[in-house]
Length: 151
Image (tube, rainbow, N blue to C red; front, side, top):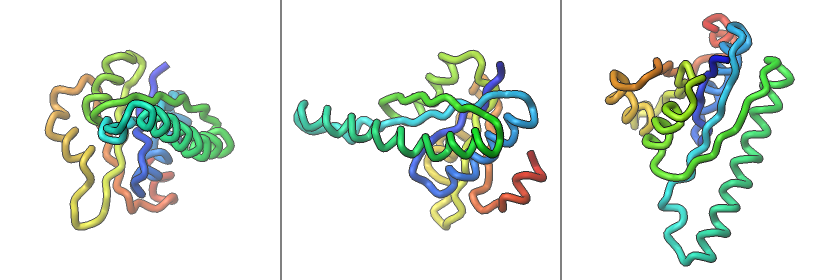
């Protein structure tokens, strides 16, 4: 089954990317895979402290995921799967796409502030031509109604 890969992070635009992926999956009979990446700089402490911090990060990710997963199941009829990877975010996104041949589209949310669309969008659009899947960039300020019309 073809899947939409969407990145779970703490950004505001992540919400619209999640919505878009779930709505498109519903309308096309696809699935949703949610990828959370734990950056390596979070664990540059003593081994024991790093292990505790890693486990706390995983717990936060699972709690955050469950909020989105419940909405996807209840509203869109989509049961997403969660993948957690550790490392540099862009490298891990590319690795996940390579590791899972069912991923058909990468969905990213674009920030709307003056700083630009966000680091993931900026970095991944530079290499979009060499990615094995298309990238859909969802504006962070699209309304739910407009997302519904588009999907």
